[in-house]
Amino acid sequence: MALLEYLPQLSTVARQPVGSSRETYLSVLSHAEELLNAGRLREARRLVAQFVERKEFESAMLPALAGLYLRIGKPEQAVATMREAIEKVGPNSDLANTFGLMLAALGRDAESRQQFEEALRLDADNTEALRNLAFTLHRAGERDRAWRLLVQCYKVRPLSAELRLVCGALFELDGHHDKAVCSYRDVLELVGLGEQMRMAATRLVALGAPEQTLAFEEVMEAMAASLESDT
Image (tube, rainbow, N blue to C red; front, side, top):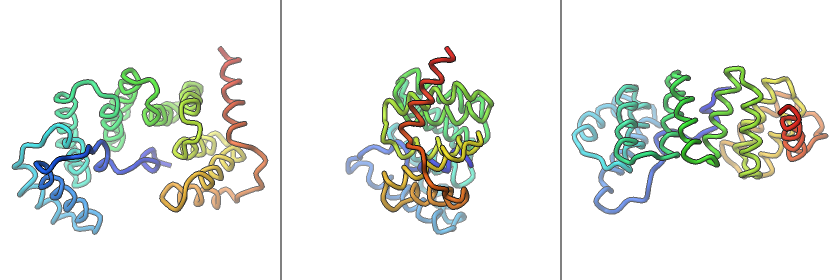
């Protein structure tokens, strides 16, 4: 299961409320996204070439532009745009996390890990960065550290559906299907209709949805206690 399955599209990350001076730019970006969602890649690329690349974007809009570049198949422009955003805005935990996601999508794992770590250096309680770094570490074989981060995330946001999705995936990878089931079932209780619910339901079907005997809270408390005893 890929990291980005659990996260929103990069092109919608870090968008800020805008004033009328930026409405035209946002309208164009939104239209490009609509074209992409409709499978009209050539038209989206043409729109970017004819309009977007000729405009000077404010720093708050650069992450959305970077996400758009990524979706139309211009990875180097996407990376350069994110670097420009970070340079203009300065150290920012959310931007570092977003950049990490972009680098992960490009398969640049070492660089993405650096960005997630930078995000947490700037804000130790950034739950998105905690989840993303944990997933990255687990995939690299650093499972104890990964679970420590997820326990920390649980303490900061104990009712996070996104945390349960990530935990469910990692429990599956570790072969703990009973714990994965309780994680996914909790997602169904916490969210209404939506992508998170669809993913959780899909995994429950794949696991055969056995009778639930565990509670997610109990699983995470036991994990925390186990990690404490190892230190």
